[in-house]
Length: 176
Ligand SMILES: CC(C)(COP(=O)(O)OP(=O)(O)OC[C@H]1O[C@@H](n2cnc3c(N)ncnc32)[C@H](O)[C@@H]1OP(=O)(O)O)[C@@H](O)C(=O)NCCC(=O)NCCS
View 1 (spheres, rainbow, N blue to C red):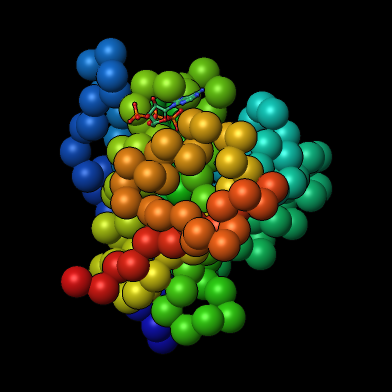
View 2: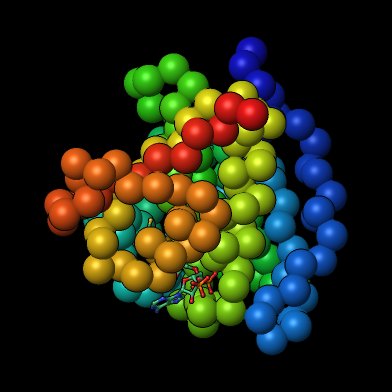
């Protein structure tokens, strides 16, 4: 069993203490557990806009459920909560390149612009490193300024050859 698979089978980790958003309000971050599937389906069903980034999240409950079934069993999944409500999901899924994970992050529309995306991404990067990933890779539309700033802030850098493309690539090396 790989570290990445083991992470999903471990008992529920305690929330890693309260974080504070830009307004000082508390939110929690913790890793996915099996019981979170239903909350994730509800989260993505209410997500706006649907297909916000590279056609994700998918639209419609059936497509959302199918997508979650494909991505949740492997990799790193970190969830952000406000009280008992799921407000964000950061994911690192293995790619065909050994040790390279694809990163994406989705935050509920009512919670954007408060610093949570950057905090969630920072924590997901640390979890990915711990799980044994050596590099994170992602694609982003350069016009998605919130996403680009979030990624840059945490250390991702554009692959220069892709920077002007409609789907630019960014990477972050995790080796110490
Ligand atoms: C992308 C996303 C995760 C960012 O999270 P967030 O909590 O809104 O962003 P933060 O408040 O942490 O801000 C991070 C940086 O982005 C900037 N930013 C936030 N919203 C912005 C906006 N609408 N326009 C421009 N910059 C913005 C912030 O100023 C900050 O940059 P700074 O450090 O230079 O000040 C969130 O907006 C989201 O879920 N968007 C929809 C889904 C998506 O596009 N996901 C990414 C692609 S997979």
